[in-house]
Image (cartoon, rainbow, N blue to C red; front, side, top):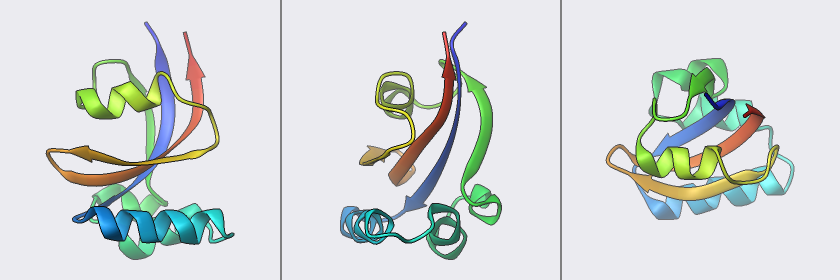
Length: 93
C-alpha cells in the first residue's frame, strides 16, 4: 500500500490560505507558519501529520498527497474541514 508523510496548514478561508502560501514561497518557514496559523492540532508540530496510508485522509487530501510533486507547497485544497496548504515530504509506492 502506498504511504506518504506530509505536513499541512488548515485555515478557514481560501484568501487566508493564499496569503500564507505567498509568505512561504517568499521564504517563511512552513513549520512556523503552521504553528502560528493552523487550526489543526498538528500545527503545534509544524503541521506534521506523520506517515499515513492512501485512503486514511479525506479524498481531496489524498488526491494531492499521492500525485503531486514532493517538497512543494500545494493548495489551497478545499475539504470539509476548511482550506489546506500541503507539503508532501515523503512518499512510497
